[in-house]
Image (cartoon, rainbow, N blue to C red; front, side, top):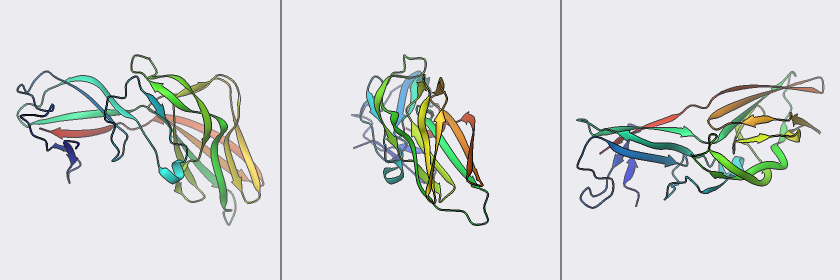
Amino acid sequence: TDPLTQISTGELEYNGTPSTDGFYWESKDDINVTAWSKGSTSTIADDPNGETFDLEKEQQTNGYQELLYMEETTKSFGTEGKISLSLEHMLSRIVITVNQDAATAQTISGITIGSNNVPTRGVFDTSEDKKWKNQGTNGTITPKTEATNSIYSAVLIPYKFTSTTANFINITIGSETFAYELPANTEFLAGKQYNYTITVKNRAITFSVTVSNWTDASKTLNF
């Protein structure tokens, strides 16, 4: 079983057998630590560096399958017996906000990212400057609903779309479907959040986008 458990403070606590488990060190200093997580209760048994990653496509139904990672870092847990782990997001995140200029908002009956033209598989490789290579196996992503008829989010494998990509964001409101065409050379980077705002007014629809850092996740590890 995993020797790390989360306690009420949000920290991770080691509950293995120090004399036999690999998490035990005689020295408190110069400890080389690598950490990774799916961002959920699911575990990744081995270091994912160099491994093929398959993106969750039905994110509304199944949630995200994230990849958080901390490359090998020298740590010391000193007198308190704690080590801080700073995990960085290795995927890209998209947040779609829909604003409807109407007294009564219409129901959003469907929203997808891509139309079998968004990479859902890639090789995670920390030796690569952008952390990913060999992206492929295109698919369609169903995003997670954050607020009904208003806010949706999804994670994507970082990738540069070198050519214009039709139907990148598809949204059905009432009986009409609108699509956003992604400009050529648009790049989604690891650890970045792309905020798309969609404004619907008088049967017209406009898109705008901003980019921000996706917040790192930190945990404290007790030994």
